[in-house]
Structures are given as C-alpha cells and as structure tokens.
Length: 452
Image (cartoon, rainbow, N blue to C red; front, side):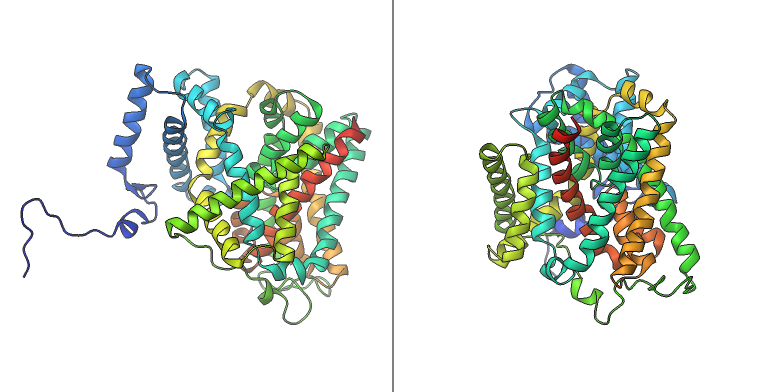
C-alpha cells in the first residue's frame, strides 16, 4: 500500500467536506470549533478597535453574524419552518444595538458595507436577485401560463391596494400611509427583493432616508408572513383528504384545471455549484443589467432603476435576447448569492435600517395590525376567486398567488408550500414573489406622485 511521506496528507474533497448540511456541530458547513475561531478573530478586532470599514471586513462580519443567527433559528423545531431564521437575522442585531449590547465598531462596519456609497453590498444582492430570478425562470412560465396567471396576480395587487386604501382612509389611517406602508410592502416580494428596493424608491421620489422607510415597512412584512404561513396550514388541514367544498376548489397540488398544466412550468434544478467562469459571467451580467437600468432611469425619470432593471430582465427573457448559457450563468450566480448571502444581507439590514422608535409607534396604533391582517385575507380570497374564474383551482391559486405575494419572499415561499403540503407549487410562488413583487415596485413608482 502506498505510504504518505513527510508532511504529505491524503487528498480531501473540499466540496464534500464543506457542503455538509448544518447540524448541531456544523455552522455554514464548518465544524463549530472552526466557526468559533473565525468568529473570535472578528470579535477581537472589534474589541481592539482595529476593524476597518472596508469590503473585506464587511463580508467577514455580516457573513459570520448572519450564519450564526440563521443556524440558531434552524435548530428550533417547528418555528424554523415559520421563518424563525429570517426573523432572528432581521431583529436580533437591531435589538442588541438598541440596548447597547452590540459593539459599535461592528455596527459601523456593517452599516458602511451594506449601504455605503462606495461599497453598497445591498445593490449587489438586489441586482443578482432581479437578474437571476427572472432570467432563470422557465420561459413557458412567462409565455404559456402568463395570461392565465396574470388575472389573479394583477387582480390581487389592485384589490389589496384598493381595499386597504379605502378601509385605511375610512379608519382615519390615511390613503397614502395605507397603500404605501401597509399594502405595498406586504405584497411587494419580501425583504431583499421587496422592501429594500422599495425603500430606495421612496427615498428617491419622496425624499428622506431609505433606512427610515425600511423601519416603517418591515413590521408589516413580518406580521403578514406569520399570518400567511398559518393560513397555509389551514388550507392543508381542510384539503388533505381531497375535500371539495365546491367544483374547482381543491386541485390536490395541481393549479390549472386543464390537462398538462403544471408540468410545463417546472423550473430547472437550481445549481449548487458552478465553474468559476460561469459565476464570473453571471456576476458580470447581473451587475451590467443593473447599470443598464440605472442608465435608462437617468434618461427616463419617474421610475426607479430597480424597476427598469426588472423590465429589462423580463424583456430579455421573453424575447430570448441573450444565449441560454448566459441566462443559466446568471441563474447560477443568483443561486449562489441567495443560498449563501441572504442571512448576511438581513443582518446588515437590521443594523443599517431598523429603527425601534418607528416600530413602537406603528404597533401602538390598533389600526395598523388590523389593516395588515385584512391585506393578507383580501390577497388570499381575491386570488383564489379570480384564479377559479380562469379555470385554476381556488385552493392552489390562493396558496401560489395570494400567499406567495404576502409571505416573506424566498424563505416565506418554502414555509408556505411546506405548511400547505403543496411543494409542486413552488415555481408559481416564485412568480408571485418575483414578478408580482416587480409589478408592485412599478406600481408604487407610479402611485407616489398621485398620492402625494
């Protein structure tokens, strides 16, 4: 048998070693002892005041803190399926900072890294998300199912805006506040793809600081997410034996009431790794597409660069303007970003944007939670009814469109389909979160001048 000589060590498959699932002994694929060592290095730098406000330090801080909180949330049975990892990442750093328990040097590094003018990690994440989620979506989902899905999707957006706006006005909460700060964030696609670009649109068109707007938008999304997952569980409970309360109510996971519906709309398996050149092309295309959206916004003011980026990505996908290999490259890059950097983004948002004074003021008004609950209920019922009218199943359309729009985006989508026991609906929830969220961003860009 061959012998190892000197300091030679046996070859190790790095991918197999690091890609192991998280457990009580592994965080981010690392043995917990190694993770603790890396975390300790950052903590010592922060304690000694030698932590720079740079991209290098920013990546280390947000990835390690986000990874730890995501790991803690994932270890809690039951609650981990209801978005606990996401909630912990959003709330914990802000809570600790509010009570003086979070190192100031860490907070400064995270603030500059997340939304600093010279770094802006948040722009990288959003550009990757927009380009990857749309270009990586099955073309048949946009073309063949587009007309059918458009009815409940557009109808839900209009109905939620109208109902919440009118009821909010009747209750004295205000039309503008009801539409822009309750209805829009709830159906806007979650946190990273929804309220973050939405806050930028608000700051750009209404003035003020984007961080203050995020603090006003996050509570509605969190409350709606919990309620939506609860409703998904109820739908599973009343349909798991195939119950039909009326013709076309329950499709048992099939969304379209015509033969050959859902099979045409399955997404490609999301890649878990890719060649370095593929990731490089995906990163470059995502960033360049965002710059193109910024360029268009410069010449066509009134609509934010994020919204133009969404429109451009949709046009590229629909008309096949780039090779499929390029689309796959962007999708691969997005898969990497969304699966590895989402917790990092959320803890950065927590420190950079979350304001507890705003949160307390919102929740102290009884009209606020009432309008949030109504928004979720309207979205679920209207989407189901409109879907039924265009020969889709009521229950499945309610889950895919209504709940897909009112959950917290990616993690919320997973929790909803799990609670509803309808995993096959995931592509349709992605349409709700991404395309629906994009339409909401476009809508608020147009509504702000009207609502004043």
